[in-house]
Structure formats: C-alpha cells, structure tokens
Image (cartoon, rainbow, N blue to C red; front, side, top):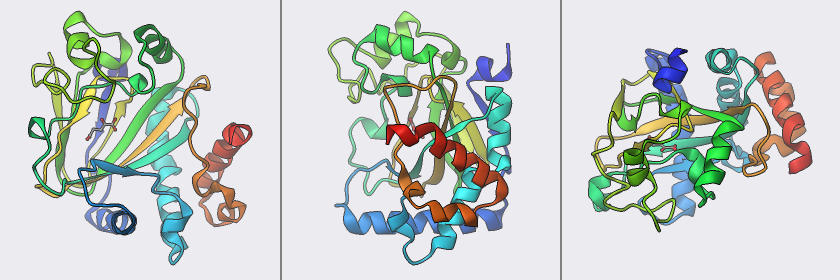
Length: 268
Ligand SMILES: O=C(O)CCC(=O)C(=O)O
C-alpha cells in the first residue's frame, strides 16, 4: 500500500522559507482584510476564492505570484506523484484564527469527509468517494496544529464507530453536535505544522479542524482534484474570465491553468 493510501496525508517539512512565508502571508492577508471589510465579523473558520480578481485590482502581481505558487511544479509535482496523472485546480481557502472563543463545543469542528457536503444519502457519498479524487495542499504561514485526520480513512469507508460520529442519524451534514465534534474519534491524529511546513491530505479522509482565537492562524489551503469529472462539484471560473492573465504566468502555471480552463469551460 502506498504511503498516501496508508496515511491519507504526507508532510512536506520546511516547504517555504521564512521570507516566502512573509510574502505569501501578506498576499493572503490583504485578501482577508478586504473580505473583512465586506463581511460582518463572525465565526468564519476560513475564507475561500482567494484568486478572485477583484481582490487584486491594485496589485495584479500579487495574484500572479499566488497563481504561480498554486500552479507551479513545486506544488503540483508532489501531488502528481500521488495522483499518477495531472491534477486539476479546484479552489483556495485561507484558514484564520477566530474573532473570539465563543464558538460551541470548545471550537471543535465537525468530523467530515469533503464528499459528504450536499450528499445526505450515504450510498451517494460512497459512490462519490470512488469517482473523482481530491487532495488539499496546505502551507502554514504560522505554526498550526488545528487539523486532525484519521490516517488511512481516505482509502476506505467508515467503521461503524466512525460513522456514528461523522454522520449520526437525522443530522445535517454540516452540523456541530456532541457526536460530530467528539474527541473520541478512534485513531485520529493531530497534524502539527511549523510555519513554512506543508501537508497534502486526502479530501475524502475523515478529518476536522479546531477553531480558536489564539494563537494566530494563517494557513493557505488549495484544493486539487484528479480522475473522472464529477457532476456534483464544479470549481468557479475565478480570475480566468480574464484571458490576458495567462501571459504573465510562469510556464508551469500557464500550462496548469490552461488545462483548468479547458477542463471546465463548458460547465461555466
Ligand atoms: O484545518 C481545518 O480547519 C479543517 C479543514 C477542513 O476540514 C477542510 O478544509 O475540509
């Protein structure tokens, strides 16, 4: 069995230098600051769609730097070793600390597989796991040990004990309940990243986050996919309505995002 199938995650220690962390953090923080101006403060665990062009109206070079990271071989190379084929872009998330510690269940997020959202039916979810494959590639700009994962769960269905916590009967797929936030998930492992460390983890694995006001959390998380095209999740077009962006990208990122547009153009 491969390390990926066995663990459902692979660590890449010291993936970014301290200087690179500062650069990419400042790009992501600028997006977050703009998001905060447009959205009421609340218990947001992360913001998504960081590559949307309106965030970069005054500094397109920051968008290009972000896209070059996301679509560069440094990131897609390790992912393609897992996938055994070219991977596709899906989305970005930026995980941030909470505005306060008032969230329920001491900040524990619900155990989930990313396949479960919009799939109330277990058989449907199980079928999804066998189709398109997906991984998160995340890099921490500050030390971050908030992700927990059940090693190996990405390559198999739940045990009865896991299912009782992850998908208790008559419970919404997003709900935080005593079961879905329980710390009793068998075998769960906390992934401790130092600033600059990266981790790739299986989006179909059983995992969850923990959400606190301190310490500061600034972790960029990019979602990729491979294998068959699903009909249940289509990434947004994001900044790629603007074809002139391609000319500014690195050769690797250009090839990567041209493939992205080609894959999804007829679904947008
Ligand atoms: O690190 C976290 O907060 C958990 C992230 C997560 O569950 C997800 O992106 O699906």
